[in-house]
Image 1 (cartoon, rainbow over the protein chains, first blue to last red):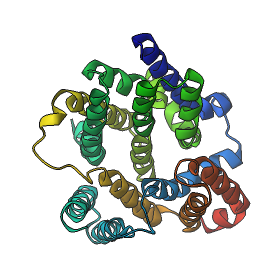
Image 2 (image 1 turned 90 degrees about the vertical axis):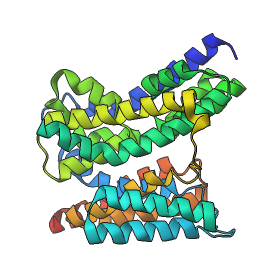
Image 3 (image 1 turned 45 degrees about the vertical axis):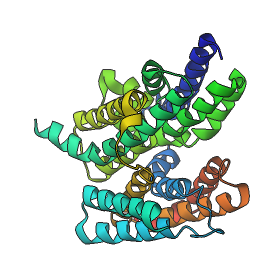
Length: 108
Length: 225
Protein backbone atom coordinates (compact mmCIF):
# COMPACT_ATOMS: atom_id res chain seq x y z
CA UNK A 1 0.00 0.00 0.00
CA UNK A 2 1.12 3.55 -0.67
CA UNK A 3 2.59 5.82 1.97
CA UNK A 4 -0.20 8.33 1.37
CA UNK A 5 -2.81 5.67 2.08
CA UNK A 6 -1.07 4.61 5.32
CA UNK A 7 -0.85 8.22 6.52
CA UNK A 8 -4.53 8.83 5.68
CA UNK A 9 -5.61 5.61 7.41
CA UNK A 10 -3.75 6.52 10.58
CA UNK A 11 -5.25 10.03 10.62
CA UNK A 12 -8.79 8.76 9.92
CA UNK A 13 -8.52 6.24 12.74
CA UNK A 14 -6.99 8.82 15.09
CA UNK A 15 -9.61 11.44 14.18
CA UNK A 16 -12.52 9.09 14.81
CA UNK A 17 -10.98 7.99 18.12
CA UNK A 18 -10.60 11.63 19.22
CA UNK A 19 -14.21 12.43 18.27
CA UNK A 20 -15.44 9.42 20.27
CA UNK A 21 -13.48 10.48 23.33
CA UNK A 22 -14.63 14.11 23.01
CA UNK A 23 -18.30 13.15 22.52
CA UNK A 24 -19.49 13.56 26.16
CA UNK A 25 -17.63 16.87 26.49
CA UNK A 26 -19.14 18.24 23.25
CA UNK A 27 -22.60 17.10 24.33
CA UNK A 28 -22.66 18.03 28.01
CA UNK A 29 -19.56 20.17 28.51
CA UNK A 30 -21.13 23.59 28.06
CA UNK A 31 -23.94 23.15 30.59
CA UNK A 32 -22.84 24.46 33.94
CA UNK A 33 -25.04 22.03 35.82
CA UNK A 34 -25.16 18.44 34.68
CA UNK A 35 -28.55 16.82 34.58
CA UNK A 36 -28.98 14.46 37.56
CA UNK A 37 -29.27 11.48 35.21
CA UNK A 38 -25.96 12.23 33.52
CA UNK A 39 -24.07 12.79 36.77
CA UNK A 40 -25.62 9.60 38.20
CA UNK A 41 -24.46 7.72 35.09
CA UNK A 42 -21.01 9.25 35.29
CA UNK A 43 -20.63 8.08 38.88
CA UNK A 44 -22.03 4.61 38.46
CA UNK A 45 -21.00 3.63 34.90
CA UNK A 46 -17.31 2.91 35.69
CA UNK A 47 -18.43 0.08 37.97
CA UNK A 48 -20.37 -1.56 35.14
CA UNK A 49 -17.78 -0.70 32.47
CA UNK A 50 -15.03 -2.53 34.39
CA UNK A 51 -17.14 -5.70 34.37
CA UNK A 52 -17.61 -5.38 30.62
CA UNK A 53 -13.88 -4.74 30.10
CA UNK A 54 -13.01 -7.93 32.00
CA UNK A 55 -15.33 -9.84 29.65
CA UNK A 56 -13.68 -7.96 26.74
CA UNK A 57 -10.23 -9.19 27.84
CA UNK A 58 -11.54 -12.77 27.86
CA UNK A 59 -13.49 -12.49 24.59
CA UNK A 60 -11.18 -14.75 22.61
CA UNK A 61 -10.90 -17.57 25.17
CA UNK A 62 -12.08 -20.89 23.67
CA UNK A 63 -14.27 -22.14 26.52
CA UNK A 64 -15.44 -25.24 24.67
CA UNK A 65 -11.95 -26.51 23.79
CA UNK A 66 -9.22 -27.74 26.13
CA UNK A 67 -8.02 -26.23 28.44
CA UNK A 68 -11.47 -24.55 28.63
CA UNK A 69 -10.12 -21.21 29.80
CA UNK A 70 -8.55 -22.84 32.86
CA UNK A 71 -5.33 -20.72 32.75
CA UNK A 72 -7.44 -17.54 32.66
CA UNK A 73 -9.74 -18.72 35.48
CA UNK A 74 -6.86 -19.84 37.72
CA UNK A 75 -4.87 -16.66 37.13
CA UNK A 76 -7.91 -14.44 37.77
CA UNK A 77 -8.62 -16.32 41.03
CA UNK A 78 -4.99 -15.80 42.07
CA UNK A 79 -5.14 -12.08 41.22
CA UNK A 80 -8.39 -11.71 43.18
CA UNK A 81 -7.07 -13.59 46.25
CA UNK A 82 -3.77 -11.67 46.22
CA UNK A 83 -5.62 -8.42 45.93
CA UNK A 84 -8.12 -9.17 48.70
CA UNK A 85 -5.17 -10.27 50.88
CA UNK A 86 -2.58 -7.53 50.27
CA UNK A 87 -4.50 -4.90 48.29
CA UNK A 88 -1.34 -3.98 46.42
CA UNK A 89 -1.84 -3.39 42.66
CA UNK A 90 1.72 -4.29 41.65
CA UNK A 91 1.81 -7.56 43.61
CA UNK A 92 -1.62 -8.67 42.37
CA UNK A 93 -0.97 -7.79 38.72
CA UNK A 94 2.73 -8.79 38.66
CA UNK A 95 2.44 -12.19 40.31
CA UNK A 96 -0.84 -12.91 38.51
CA UNK A 97 0.73 -12.21 35.11
CA UNK A 98 3.86 -14.26 35.82
CA UNK A 99 1.65 -17.13 37.02
CA UNK A 100 -0.45 -16.92 33.84
CA UNK A 101 2.66 -16.87 31.63
CA UNK A 102 4.00 -20.00 33.34
CA UNK A 103 0.61 -21.68 32.91
CA UNK A 104 0.28 -20.98 29.18
CA UNK A 105 3.96 -21.57 28.36
CA UNK A 106 4.83 -24.59 30.51
CA UNK A 107 1.69 -26.38 31.63
CA UNK A 108 -1.19 -26.00 29.19
CA UNK B 1 8.17 15.67 43.90
CA UNK B 2 5.77 13.64 46.04
CA UNK B 3 3.02 14.05 43.46
CA UNK B 4 5.37 12.76 40.72
CA UNK B 5 6.23 9.68 42.76
CA UNK B 6 2.58 8.98 43.59
CA UNK B 7 1.53 9.31 39.96
CA UNK B 8 4.47 7.13 38.88
CA UNK B 9 3.54 4.37 41.34
CA UNK B 10 -0.14 4.59 40.37
CA UNK B 11 0.78 4.31 36.67
CA UNK B 12 3.36 1.57 37.05
CA UNK B 13 1.09 -1.45 36.46
CA UNK B 14 -0.27 0.14 33.28
CA UNK B 15 3.18 1.28 32.15
CA UNK B 16 4.59 -2.23 32.47
CA UNK B 17 1.62 -3.61 30.53
CA UNK B 18 1.83 -0.83 27.92
CA UNK B 19 5.57 -1.33 27.37
CA UNK B 20 5.14 -5.04 26.66
CA UNK B 21 1.95 -4.81 24.62
CA UNK B 22 3.52 -1.82 22.84
CA UNK B 23 6.53 -3.98 21.95
CA UNK B 24 4.16 -6.60 20.53
CA UNK B 25 2.47 -3.88 18.45
CA UNK B 26 5.79 -2.48 17.20
CA UNK B 27 6.95 -5.97 16.27
CA UNK B 28 3.77 -6.69 14.34
CA UNK B 29 3.89 -3.37 12.47
CA UNK B 30 7.56 -3.93 11.63
CA UNK B 31 6.76 -7.39 10.26
CA UNK B 32 4.45 -5.66 7.77
CA UNK B 33 7.33 -3.46 6.63
CA UNK B 34 6.72 -0.31 8.68
CA UNK B 35 9.63 1.18 10.63
CA UNK B 36 9.65 2.61 14.17
CA UNK B 37 8.60 6.01 12.84
CA UNK B 38 5.27 4.48 11.84
CA UNK B 39 4.92 2.78 15.21
CA UNK B 40 5.55 6.11 16.93
CA UNK B 41 3.14 7.96 14.60
CA UNK B 42 0.38 5.41 15.20
CA UNK B 43 0.87 5.53 18.97
CA UNK B 44 0.70 9.33 18.95
CA UNK B 45 -2.05 9.90 16.38
CA UNK B 46 -4.35 6.94 17.11
CA UNK B 47 -3.36 5.97 20.69
CA UNK B 48 -5.94 3.21 21.07
CA UNK B 49 -4.29 -0.16 21.67
CA UNK B 50 -6.65 -2.72 20.20
CA UNK B 51 -7.52 -0.46 17.23
CA UNK B 52 -3.84 -0.01 16.42
CA UNK B 53 -3.50 -3.77 16.12
CA UNK B 54 -6.52 -3.88 13.79
CA UNK B 55 -5.01 -1.01 11.81
CA UNK B 56 -1.88 -3.07 11.10
CA UNK B 57 -3.98 -5.58 9.20
CA UNK B 58 -5.75 -2.74 7.37
CA UNK B 59 -2.43 -1.20 6.32
CA UNK B 60 -1.31 -4.49 4.79
CA UNK B 61 -4.62 -5.30 3.10
CA UNK B 62 -5.54 -1.75 2.05
CA UNK B 63 -9.07 -1.52 3.43
CA UNK B 64 -11.08 1.53 2.35
CA UNK B 65 -10.88 4.64 4.53
CA UNK B 66 -14.61 4.27 5.24
CA UNK B 67 -13.94 0.78 6.61
CA UNK B 68 -11.14 2.22 8.74
CA UNK B 69 -13.53 4.88 10.12
CA UNK B 70 -16.41 2.48 10.83
CA UNK B 71 -14.16 -0.15 12.39
CA UNK B 72 -12.55 2.48 14.62
CA UNK B 73 -16.02 3.61 15.67
CA UNK B 74 -16.98 0.03 16.54
CA UNK B 75 -13.77 -1.01 18.27
CA UNK B 76 -13.50 2.21 20.30
CA UNK B 77 -17.23 2.78 20.85
CA UNK B 78 -16.88 2.05 24.56
CA UNK B 79 -14.91 5.31 24.84
CA UNK B 80 -18.12 7.22 23.99
CA UNK B 81 -19.11 6.91 27.64
CA UNK B 82 -15.77 7.29 29.42
CA UNK B 83 -15.68 11.08 29.45
CA UNK B 84 -19.02 11.28 31.29
CA UNK B 85 -17.19 10.44 34.52
CA UNK B 86 -14.75 13.33 34.08
CA UNK B 87 -16.80 16.25 32.75
CA UNK B 88 -16.47 18.12 36.05
CA UNK B 89 -12.93 16.88 36.78
CA UNK B 90 -11.45 17.95 33.43
CA UNK B 91 -12.92 21.46 33.79
CA UNK B 92 -10.20 22.03 36.41
CA UNK B 93 -7.44 20.94 34.02
CA UNK B 94 -7.07 24.28 32.16
CA UNK B 95 -5.02 24.09 28.97
CA UNK B 96 -4.48 20.37 29.54
CA UNK B 97 -8.17 19.53 29.12
CA UNK B 98 -7.87 18.71 25.36
CA UNK B 99 -4.92 16.43 26.11
CA UNK B 100 -6.82 14.67 28.89
CA UNK B 101 -9.73 14.01 26.51
CA UNK B 102 -7.49 12.86 23.65
CA UNK B 103 -5.47 10.49 25.86
CA UNK B 104 -8.42 8.82 27.64
CA UNK B 105 -7.57 5.20 26.82
CA UNK B 106 -9.08 2.17 28.62
CA UNK B 107 -6.25 1.90 31.11
CA UNK B 108 -5.88 5.62 31.69
CA UNK B 109 -9.64 5.80 32.25
CA UNK B 110 -9.34 2.97 34.81
CA UNK B 111 -6.53 4.68 36.72
CA UNK B 112 -8.29 8.05 36.67
CA UNK B 113 -11.47 6.36 37.99
CA UNK B 114 -9.36 4.80 40.73
CA UNK B 115 -7.81 8.17 41.64
CA UNK B 116 -11.25 9.78 41.66
CA UNK B 117 -12.77 7.07 43.86
CA UNK B 118 -9.88 7.50 46.30
CA UNK B 119 -10.63 11.23 46.50
CA UNK B 120 -7.47 12.43 44.73
CA UNK B 121 -7.99 16.11 44.01
CA UNK B 122 -4.71 17.36 42.51
CA UNK B 123 -5.12 17.97 38.73
CA UNK B 124 -1.39 17.30 38.33
CA UNK B 125 -1.87 13.71 39.46
CA UNK B 126 -4.43 13.13 36.68
CA UNK B 127 -2.21 14.78 34.06
CA UNK B 128 0.91 12.86 35.09
CA UNK B 129 -0.89 9.51 35.05
CA UNK B 130 -2.15 10.21 31.50
CA UNK B 131 1.30 11.34 30.31
CA UNK B 132 3.19 8.44 31.93
CA UNK B 133 0.77 5.96 30.38
CA UNK B 134 1.00 7.36 26.87
CA UNK B 135 4.77 7.78 26.99
CA UNK B 136 5.21 4.15 28.01
CA UNK B 137 2.94 3.06 25.15
CA UNK B 138 4.92 5.15 22.62
CA UNK B 139 8.26 3.94 23.98
CA UNK B 140 7.05 0.32 23.98
CA UNK B 141 5.89 0.46 20.37
CA UNK B 142 9.16 2.07 19.21
CA UNK B 143 11.15 -0.53 21.17
CA UNK B 144 9.11 -3.29 19.56
CA UNK B 145 9.88 -2.05 16.07
CA UNK B 146 13.58 -1.49 16.89
CA UNK B 147 14.74 -4.38 19.02
CA UNK B 148 11.70 -6.57 19.76
CA UNK B 149 13.17 -9.34 17.65
CA UNK B 150 16.06 -9.74 20.08
CA UNK B 151 14.13 -9.98 23.36
CA UNK B 152 15.59 -13.12 24.96
CA UNK B 153 12.44 -14.47 26.60
CA UNK B 154 9.13 -15.95 25.63
CA UNK B 155 6.57 -13.23 26.22
CA UNK B 156 3.52 -15.38 25.48
CA UNK B 157 0.76 -14.48 27.92
CA UNK B 158 2.18 -11.10 28.95
CA UNK B 159 -1.00 -9.44 27.73
CA UNK B 160 -2.73 -10.96 30.78
CA UNK B 161 -1.39 -7.91 32.66
CA UNK B 162 -4.34 -5.97 31.19
CA UNK B 163 -6.88 -8.54 32.41
CA UNK B 164 -5.27 -8.56 35.86
CA UNK B 165 -5.44 -4.76 35.98
CA UNK B 166 -9.17 -4.74 35.22
CA UNK B 167 -9.78 -7.47 37.84
CA UNK B 168 -7.88 -5.44 40.46
CA UNK B 169 -9.83 -2.29 39.66
CA UNK B 170 -13.08 -4.25 39.70
CA UNK B 171 -12.29 -5.47 43.23
CA UNK B 172 -11.29 -1.95 44.34
CA UNK B 173 -14.62 -0.70 43.02
CA UNK B 174 -16.55 -3.41 44.86
CA UNK B 175 -14.94 -2.07 48.06
CA UNK B 176 -15.75 1.55 47.13
CA UNK B 177 -19.13 1.17 45.47
CA UNK B 178 -22.29 1.96 47.41
CA UNK B 179 -23.99 -0.95 45.64
CA UNK B 180 -22.79 -4.22 44.12
CA UNK B 181 -25.45 -3.99 41.41
CA UNK B 182 -23.54 -1.93 38.77
CA UNK B 183 -20.59 -4.36 38.71
CA UNK B 184 -22.88 -7.37 38.42
CA UNK B 185 -24.93 -5.66 35.68
CA UNK B 186 -21.71 -4.95 33.73
CA UNK B 187 -20.40 -8.51 34.00
CA UNK B 188 -23.79 -10.02 33.15
CA UNK B 189 -24.54 -7.83 30.14
CA UNK B 190 -20.96 -8.37 28.91
CA UNK B 191 -21.22 -12.16 29.17
CA UNK B 192 -24.71 -12.37 27.63
CA UNK B 193 -23.82 -10.10 24.69
CA UNK B 194 -20.55 -12.00 24.14
CA UNK B 195 -22.42 -15.31 23.94
CA UNK B 196 -25.08 -13.95 21.58
CA UNK B 197 -23.02 -11.62 19.37
CA UNK B 198 -19.50 -13.10 19.46
CA UNK B 199 -16.15 -11.51 20.34
CA UNK B 200 -15.99 -8.78 17.70
CA UNK B 201 -19.32 -6.99 18.07
CA UNK B 202 -20.52 -7.40 21.64
CA UNK B 203 -19.05 -4.45 23.47
CA UNK B 204 -21.23 -1.58 22.20
CA UNK B 205 -24.53 -3.49 22.74
CA UNK B 206 -23.28 -4.60 26.17
CA UNK B 207 -22.58 -0.98 27.12
CA UNK B 208 -25.97 0.23 25.82
CA UNK B 209 -27.79 -2.53 27.73
CA UNK B 210 -25.81 -1.80 30.91
CA UNK B 211 -26.62 1.94 30.64
CA UNK B 212 -30.31 1.16 30.08
CA UNK B 213 -30.50 -1.20 33.05
CA UNK B 214 -28.55 1.22 35.25
CA UNK B 215 -31.05 3.98 34.39
CA UNK B 216 -33.87 1.58 35.33
CA UNK B 217 -32.23 0.85 38.69
CA UNK B 218 -31.45 4.53 39.33
CA UNK B 219 -33.77 4.88 42.35
CA UNK B 220 -32.70 1.60 43.90
CA UNK B 221 -28.95 2.27 43.54
CA UNK B 222 -29.24 5.87 44.72
CA UNK B 223 -31.17 4.76 47.83
CA UNK B 224 -28.39 2.35 48.84
CA UNK B 225 -25.76 5.02 48.10
